[in-house]
Image (cartoon, rainbow, N blue to C red; front, side, top):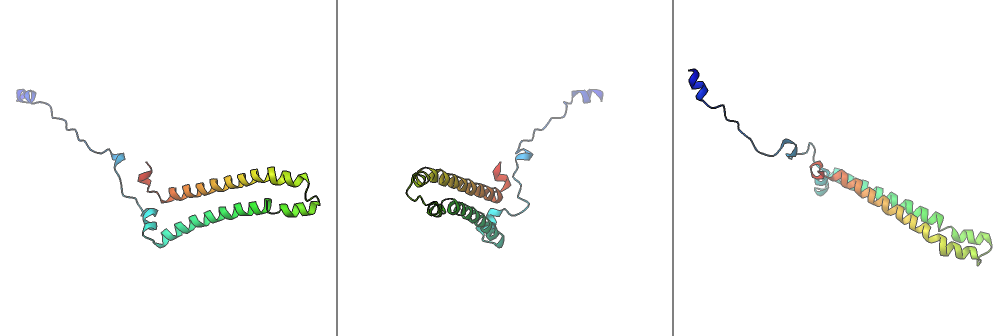
Length: 129
């Protein structure tokens, strides 16, 4: 009997191949926001409205800055009394453009950040990988 056990080979090891556990795609615990938007549900409409509101806030902020900084220049020129002097030409020729560029740059950065936040909200966590 001892000879029979020695002659039997050790149990064969089985190797199971497949997708690693961490790489398996699990269904999300909730419905992704992307499907809420594409199906035009109330929640999807709320997501889109939130994006539109944030973009409108950025646009109104940039417009308010533009009006308050550049739109008041005629009033400043009228109050200064020197309507044709070098101050007007310096302000209109040199100072206005960097201010407008800074406001535009702030607006573009804010709008891109709003869109990135929205994209992060509606992306399926499994697709972010």
